[in-house]
Length: 158
Image (cartoon, rainbow, N blue to C red; front, side, top):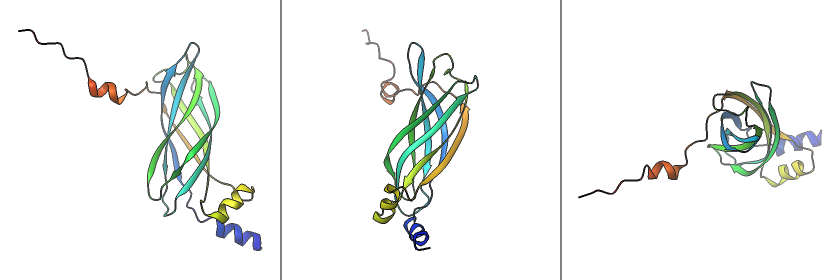
């Protein structure tokens, strides 16, 4: 009973809301393509949330898939929404613009307060938020530098 009370007291962080918002091709190789999955994470609480790891599975309509784990290495500020990107390596023939995808997974997180963190590190407190999403793969977004510079201007002749 005492442990249950300690566990409840140690978990004061509000579970973040997470959704997979988009996926786009970030790079292409000879046989594989790197697809970036963009997650939107919202902290509706008034305490910072320490994100630990993402575990996820992306499936394409043709049956190809990638199962991954990625270190989060960030904090989620209170009352804010942030975007995070996790990678997937898929066959280049499958990862084409317009290909349908669906992703599901979870993000583990912990309360940065010392007592809850000790319980987490000891394996007594595991907190995670699930996510999912679907859509069509987009081509890589244009780099901001290329878009800002635009086409080169031709010199004027006089």
